[in-house]
Length: 310
Image (spheres, rainbow, N blue to C red):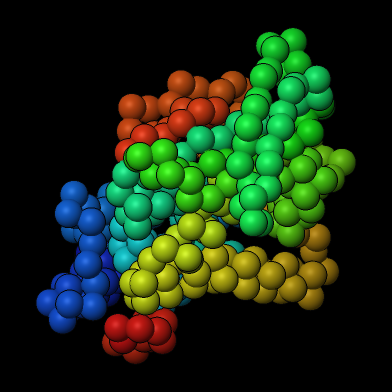
């Protein structure tokens, strides 16, 4: 069994590590100076050995070697660290996907804008909230909130502001609760009248949604690193495509699918205090290297996916 695990590691992790070295040597891939691809791959492998799909089966047994390789490569090229919850691995059918968290999205903004500061929050009924639009650019002028206004069922909007260290505005994203719910509906795990993470922690999920949208806009408009952008967008497209394929396959077999892995991953983003528990009970205090929940973040037989650098 140990030999099989070692062979699988050699056929996946070692393949990715060798390919990353090749990309770095050719100058096609430039990773952040404080990022160790080798350490990230080791951490990912340890996590993958314990990761199971929604049926309780090990993903390393269920998922194809090709999808495992591509998920690991997406992680490394984006410079993500699974230990810091910047990404997580989800199995959709026999495909493994590296899903970026909103912690990861914010880390990538700081990769393209090193001195970036990120502000975000939720607007509740009764808050004083004002913003202006100047030549198509939104700027928040005022947000006054009283603690008695903070009620999960009274959310009106959420926002995310990204600025440079000198205070120059980069982008402001504001979404109404209707827009946020519409975005949630695009995911197969969301149930409008359910009892999942979106219903239990709507404020956290609303912030996650608006932060991801703001970060994606900034990353795509600020970076000229083609390989990085390719994997940044490919990871999102891969997750959507794999999720849809899993749903189609399940429906074809006469089953109603409930994609629990994404719901579990969203629970982690929303702030699960005890990872061993299947249900999210309380919002934790963020680790030192992660942003606060509401506030500011300061300055072979198979081939890899076709794309830049391959």
